[in-house]
Image (cartoon, rainbow, N blue to C red; front, side, top):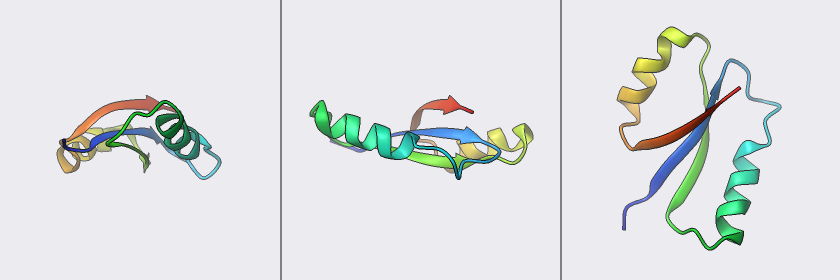
Length: 63
């Protein structure tokens, strides 16, 4: 089974606890093959490039 990719986008993500939270949540719930990453996005215009660079990205949160 291939890995599923999820993440958080936003201008400044250094304060975010989302990666640790979702990594632990996936583990606790027994949800395998999932990864949650932070994707710093300085400008919304870079969103298309982010999607092109990560075609396996299945879902995002925004901050």
